[in-house]
Image (cartoon, rainbow, N blue to C red; front, side, top):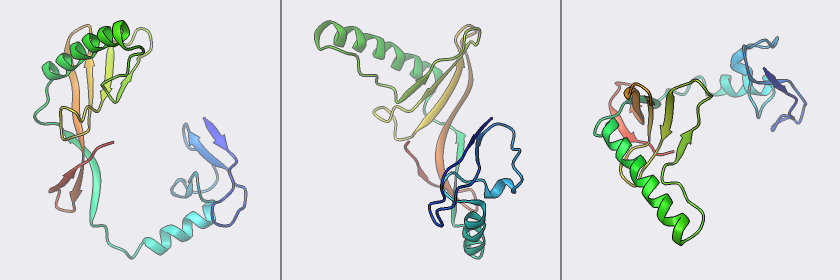
Length: 153
């Protein structure tokens, strides 16, 4: 658990902000904010309450990208790395993010690659079993769950 002691962007008061872990502060969790103290955050929430939401951001199953495509991208990344290291210097990654997993964990996390897709995606796959765990994309939807736009990072 990480607890920070920032100063409120609005009133300047110092307060406790819990950045991670199981929530344990005395104030309600909805007022736990890294920029505003609980009192100012409550005022913001109360002021915005009457305004109706028009859309929300969520992750949905990705279409048009599969594990075979992602593996091809990895092969291209390796080929380009060899080329760049041999001819032009340090390797610049093609993927937006590849998360290294802890030892003993066989799942690989990959995010992004807008050069090949109009969408931002998040892929999880198991490198030992070669199985896709999940492949999702980030979208903005209206209140009837209709996709308004695909989002990039």
